[in-house]
Amino acid sequence: MPKTNRTIEEKIAIVLEGLKGEISVSELCRKHGISQTMYYKWRDKFLEGGKKWLTGAGISDGSKSEKAKIEELERVIGKQAVEIQILKKNLNLL
Image (tube, rainbow, N blue to C red; front, side):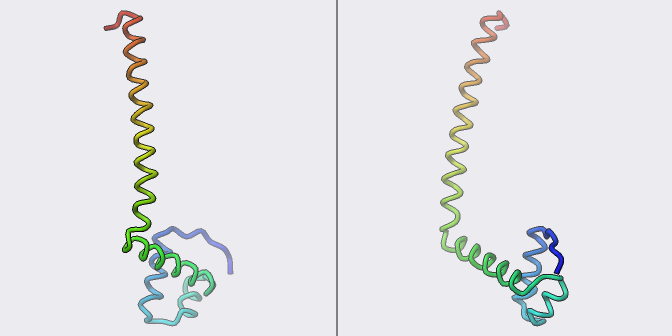
């Protein structure tokens, strides 16, 4: 089967269609031109992501790294603001 790049929305739609059970997985895979192995990988990742979200396990890891990034950016912005004030003062722009 030719390899195509699918968007996350397309993958989710295929997984949800498979989870509905209205057609067999083999029919679903033929319909969308993917292997059954690929479908089951997508399904397992989809279900694992849902499990992590429901237990809150995936949320805290992302929040911690995002919070650290925000704090670092705030420090950089603060430093730049001070430097701008110093430069304006030295150029008599204030």
